[in-house]
Structure formats: structure tokens, C-alpha cells
Image (cartoon, rainbow, N blue to C red; front, top):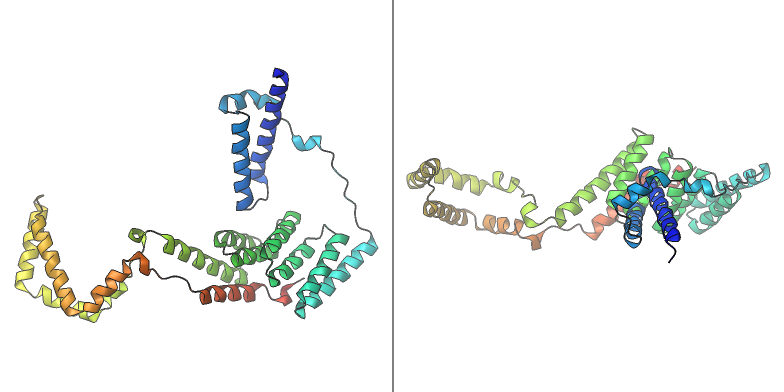
Length: 317
């Protein structure tokens, strides 16, 4: 094996890795693509044994790989093509209003063929894809629109809808935040952001282990039987005496576990007598098998609310 070729290969791989790292920082990549790029970097480093020392030595060999690739001259559409593209877009908009989504898709695609540098065409086609429940295609079109115009708030908004329809609420949240960044104060984006966050945090809570699941304290403070029971117990001289002994032993640094057990047992017995259903409800609230799940109906409501608040046909351009 030629050592010089091995050195050149390592230099090439080093520069590829450098390019990929730059894309992670400055490229317009969604979370899924970023994860793929990070995995690619790790695989290349392992396959070609590029550890920290090797990369430090190759630092002086860093080059701009893109500069080595000829920049294809963009063919600008002529006036007739621009006009025909706009006509196709307008036809697509009419089809959207008539719920003829396949026809709208065809017209927007034709507009893109005629003028692939217009971000509006991609964003409108994303709306058609969403109506046809082709949400992954809608995401790709939104990303293409954003690549052409990084300040395009509506493209971020539709990107959020597509992610929401795929239950990717973390990505949807990021898209809506970007939409509001470029269109601050937009009530529709704020509503969609709130809905995405509610779903995201709801999923996080349902996935949390039982010791991290929040307990609804309202069932304690709003239960009249418990309040009545607590009042009676505090008026019981024997119970007060028991708790007083336990507190005094705790403060002295020598807590009596038997006293604690006795107090807890007394408390549990009186709670059971005062309100048996309360104890059972408390047990259920601590049982992870009884965690409340979001129903399919709620899923549908979120989709519809999100869709109606930001994705009506009248919003196409």
C-alpha cells in the first residue's frame, strides 16, 4: 500500500469531515439530517482512524472543497416562462380553493419546473402535499422554500404543520418559533406553537417514570372528607401526642422509626375510614399503568386546530 496515497486519503477525509462539521453549524439542516451528518462524521473518523492528533496535524491541509467544484451557471427563466409559471401558480391556487388537491399539485410542480427559484411555489405545493397527507413531501418543499428565502415565515409555519402531522412536536415547535421570529405577533403561529408545546410536554410527562410524574395536589386540598378528617385528627389528643413525640425525637437527631410507622399507620387507617375512594384514587394516581393517554380524538383535534389556524386555502399566495 502506497503510504503517500494513504496520507492523501486521510487529507481528503479530513476535509470532508470539516465540510460536514461546517454544515452542522451553518447549514440549513433539520434535526433528522443533523443526526445523520453526525453519524457520518463518526463513521469516517473511525474508518480512517482520524483521532485528535491526526486531525491536528492535518489542520494546515484544510481546503475549501466546494471551490474545487465548478459552479453551474443558473439558467434564468425568460419573461414568457416567468409569466407561465405565475399562471400555473394561480391555477394551482384555484384548485386548492376547490379542494382539487391533485390538480393543484400538478400546477405547482409545473410552476417550479418553469421557475425553480421562486420560494412561493414550493411553499404552495407543500400546502397541497399536506392536504393529500403526504407530509414528508411537504417538509421537503418547505425546506426548499426556506433554503431559497430563510426569512419566509409562512414556509416555517407550514413546516411546523407537516411536522405536527407526523407527531414530531419538538421539530414543529422549532419551526413555529422560527415562523414567529420572521413574523412576530402572528396569532396563528402563536396558537400553533402553543398546541405543539402542549402535545410535546404531554408526551414528555406520559413517558416520565412514575417517580417523576406530577401528582395532582388538588385532589388533596379540594377533598372535603379529607379536610374534615384532618380537622378531627388534629383535635385528637392521642394523635397530637404521638406526633409531638415523633417531632421531638426527630429534632434530637434520633428519630424513632417505630413512632413514624405508628403515626403513618394511624393516618392511613383514618383516611381509609373517612373516604375509601380517596385512598384508591391516590393509589391510581401513583400507578404508572393508569397514566392518562392522549386519545386519538384529541390527536385529531390538534391536527384540525393546527391545520385550520394556519393552513386554510385562502392563505396560499
